[in-house]
Image (cartoon, rainbow, N blue to C red; front, side, top):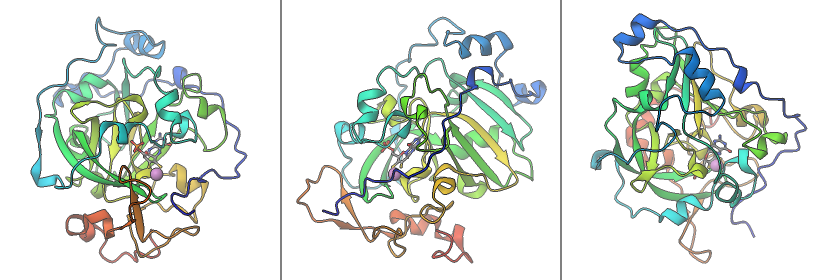
Length: 331
Ligand SMILES: Nc1nc2c(c(=O)[nH]1)N[C@H]1C(S)=C(S)[C@@H](COP(=O)(O)O)O[C@H]1N2
Ligand SMILES: [Mo]
């Protein structure tokens, strides 16, 4: 059988370090420019409360209703989306285990509100912001995107979110900001997978700044018109539809602007197998399997595999970002 290659697990023995998430120092804040950007960094007491899992404001731990939104046809494919069940019961979220059913089964009690995101690095505005401050100014829209995992499965997802670039601009990245690094929550008490050494936690991903600013690059907060369920990366996850799924980091707590290319989890774990760019490319095989075709989730195991498209079908929109790059070498 060569359906999915599910043995992504590497023979790595990296011990899982004790977390210091709750003790992380609060990053410096340029209060004046933050206010100018319409952002109010969390006060110290609120940070302490959030770190203890307490709500800094009444009601902040309960998700509000999903605001009204429209589908953005310009950036949506016309293929029919997969069902809610197709999208939320077969997942990769190694923090909750390696089986596809683990995230659905083991992430139910994961607390995603209150939530805050640290903004750091090469930007005029840095500091810690509540999820509400992050999301509030952005009109949510639905984008129906193709999604292709490096393991060889795919599906069609109606994400709810807003362009990452619109958020990043609010922090006014400096001219030294050449990359953006994004990091998942580190909390082994809630995430049993982080008590194992399968990856060097926390999960880190990154994009070149022009990739991050591309209008297709989405920060998702929901899918199928509902808030993201935990297994899908609540409350905030990246979606980069022309790249293999591992670039789409889940449950983000930190965004850092950097001058140098960030060290990203899968690239560090297995550099021969997972590149930094990770653009979907049917012409470049993974060292252990072909990337020419994919299995569409929900189509049934007997359905023939379908052709994988260059840049996952988004070549017209993004191929120009990689002019001059040897796409066989920079995979
Ligand atoms: N923090 C974190 N983010 C992650 C992963 C993970 O294990 N941990 N898996 C990645 C991989 S390999 C894929 S294919 C997608 C899966 O997203 P989905 O489960 O919502 O389809 O999440 C990506 N983001
Ligand atoms: Mo993946």
